[in-house]
Image (cartoon, rainbow, N blue to C red):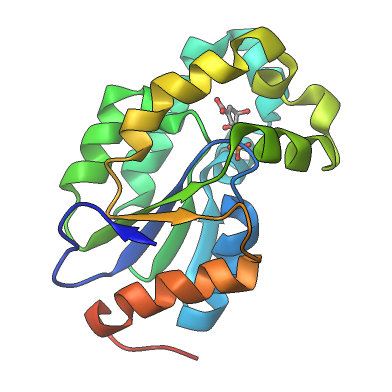
Length: 187
Ligand code: S3P
């Protein structure tokens, strides 16, 4: 684990960023359970608010419209305390999201990092792989990953998840933040 930016003095929420297949939605619930915090996945919140799947939003309204909605949801969700929030892999493409990540107090941003081929093969094994819009666009996968990487690297913590289990990843995050928790609710 690498500590990048200065960690906040107090941590009231943790935001997981990283490419598709990095493990955000697997690690997030485990971490939330150990902290006795709530876990939310920004994509699932967006789907329940709009009543449409991410794949349908992409195909019917286009990626730009999806990004606008995604940024609004992130802006609203970061007001919550005691929250572990997983962002969609492309959320950092939007300047407003990056600004929220860098400038929301009491927020620890964690980048789950893994080799691109490992993440792609994890995604391929998951249900719904054939309808994930960004995964389907094979030609642009590597360039998307590379252009997002500098933004992911602005996180407070960078964890290489390629060889770690979800439990080990969650444990590493906990050890980094446990002394900084706003109220210690650790299970
Ligand atoms: C996307 C990743 C997806 C989802 C959408 C776009 C991306 O989230 O937000 O399909 O641009 O990489 P996950 O990273 O949770 O798969």
